[in-house]
Image 1 (cartoon, rainbow, N blue to C red):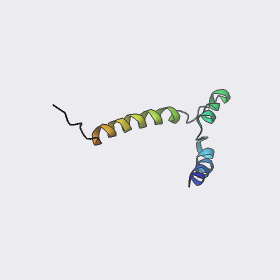
Image 2 (tube, rainbow, N blue to C red):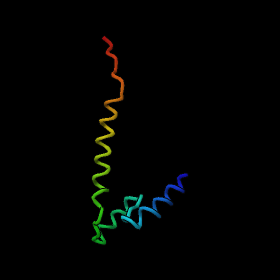
Image 3 (cartoon, helix red, strand yellow):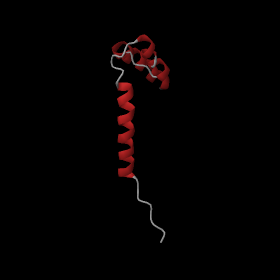
Length: 67
């Protein structure tokens, strides 16, 4: 399943937006000077981290106080 996921990502996402699963490949945009759709590599992880932190705060159980 992992191989299939990588294959589909490469075949589907690559030609559309130049997507890559490896950050080192994404950084090649710096050398090439091609920044089309590159913003998603910065905004996506930041937004995902914030949403993940908020979801964690909403679903975690409060720690009982030992008084």
